Image 1: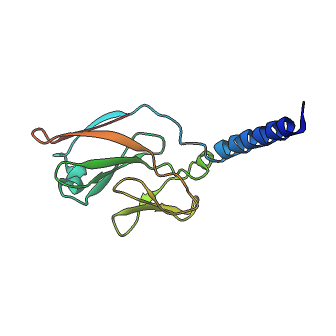
Image 2: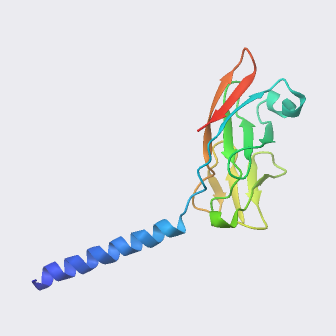
Length: 144
């Protein structure tokens, strides 16, 4: 094999190995089946009656935060921090009511609107679930 091909092959193999390492560092939150319906008329979901309200619900990998964006839109985010997910760090909503963070384990913060990272070391946003809201029955479906 001639020298240019040998160099190209060595560089390609090195690049593939580096990409494999990066994938290992960015392991994702475990995939958990979610299909939950909550009735916003129930007292435990009073906070979700107004935009900016939020509530914890059981489900997902480490629980779910439901956040009301406006009259018809919600976000549903897994509480499992995406930084070193094997550590099973769980985020909580902070005093601002618009951020979820964990200061003891994963040391990251996320926006409740969409789960995006606002403070690292996490590089990936919180896992989002789909939502479907029926305004007539006040039932919110959360699913993946």
